[in-house]
Amino acid sequence: PKNNQTLPANSVILRWNKIYSSDTYQYEVEVSTDSILFDDNIIHNSTTSSDSIIMNLNNQQYYWRVRAIKNQTTYPWSTTQAFLIFKP
Image 1 (cartoon, rainbow, N blue to C red):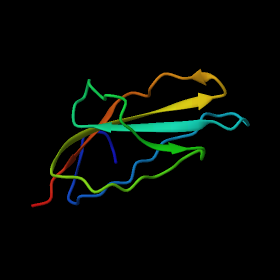
Image 2 (cartoon, one colour; image 1 turned 120 degrees about the vertical axis):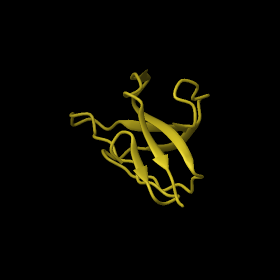
Image 3 (tube, helix red, strand yellow; image 1 turned 90 degrees about the horizontal axis):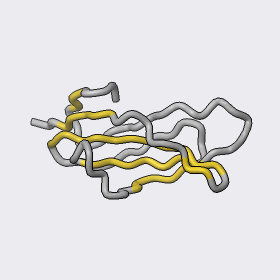
Image 4 (cartoon, rainbow, N blue to C red; image 1 turned 135 degrees about the horizontal axis):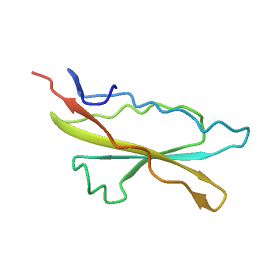
């Protein structure tokens, strides 16, 4: 979703862009209900350049971020994005 978007369902598709390189990277995604404390909640690992995750979520605000890993190098987390699940 777009940053700070309100979604009228309990599932969401998260997408990110690959690192522009011919090398293969692993991507880790974290989702949290706290914008600062993610508590190493890795919910998905992927080696695809752009991926999606569908999750069953409750009505509330969520924050997510993604990072790349190559060999023994772990890159910084992306900018944290937010979305709100609101299903009346």
